Length: 545
Ligand code: NA7
Image (tube, rainbow, N blue to C red; front, side, top):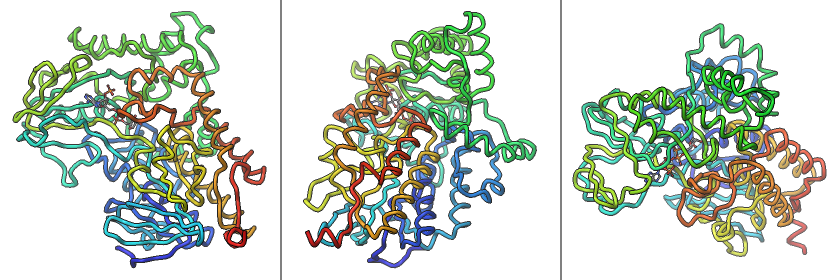
């Protein structure tokens, strides 16, 4: 299924997840020649690699998808409220085949470098096998969480058991039955792994550094009647999502902390805990992310739930997040996570003070010498988010300057779409894009890149670059919005929103938290103002200068 080597195309897209697939469709519409490269064996991106037991989305299926094709919305049948990784993968394959995209996608291909030549206005892109592509536009759909990180503890080679990574789970699966399994990491991933793996293994030891605020997803299967209801409602679903702060099809609660009595507040939290998912955060009180009292109330409600679910009081207390606000880190959805700690074969180990430090022949050891035995160690230890995947590619502009070096103090972009100094490098869900339901963010960015390229083409222009002023202004705005939220506390607890989970990574907010409507409005101001913030030129004119 690989296409011919040594190609020259108008646009080269890196990544065949939601972003890359949707971009290819847009490029076809524009009549541009295009190629998509992906390191995996098939489309899927995040959902190609994260094949671990329990992997599913934290967004509801009917909005964790692309909106542009009515036909796809009408024909693809989602099976569950939150689809499993296999289902999202199948969906992306369905879209790929429906739009006959495979001839323009090359799999098993990792891009290692990209260098812009300002005299020819072309990027030269080199892959891990040394294959070379040239293109006018280099478009990235790298994913925000695609570079997994694993702690570098001493003695990895010493361990005689098996080491598994959730973000690169064996394609053939892993047989954990009857084994003693250690799990490191209790983020959104670890929390999905625990209840599923607990059913299969002899013993599961869960190492927790920072407890999370996990609200139940309350997953359910969708039947024809539910799907018909969703389909009939799609106009309003997309309108809601495009106006929602996190891109969900939810409505504002219409009330704040002070609007109700304490008893009323408990009742509202309880009701939405039962509904499950993001309703708990977004349809209870509209000020949870900005008002400490509202946040404290939600946090205490969740702690009390944990105390009521987990029967061993010491374990319950360890599982209770304290000292940082709800949403201070990205909160996961749970599917039987807390309940799993009531099983005899599941043990929680607190490594918040005395961290894990080394592998032994038979397991893991903490700094002060506590030892734990395991046949299999699973790492669900997170990602070098957003900028990591860019920085592992050696991206350089015409002057030889590297993007990684430019981002030494943190990435700076305009709307997440491009960085100053890097002409014709266009990003989908790049640094400083909107933080929201990501298929939606990617689709917005793709449509905007489409509008930009379409307009440039009409005007006979072929070079676009973000201005330094626009990137500075966007960074300042991002920070201003971020400072209004309780998310700033994420720095204390290693939030990946901030780059705080990676030692040495600049701590600068990686996302815009102003909501989908404001993000769209910012793009529309740019577009309707002759793409203010971007310098558009023709390479012909440039070469005459
Ligand atoms: P996360 O949310 O970054 O979680 C990583 C987890 O791994 C988290 O609990 C970390 O603890 C833990 N971790 C990382 N390094 C260590 C060491 N050295 N020792 C012990 N524990 C460690 O990644 P996920 O994959 O779960 O989720 C990422 C996103 O995917 C999620 O937010 C959703 O958007 C989907 P820490 O909290 O840093 O103390």
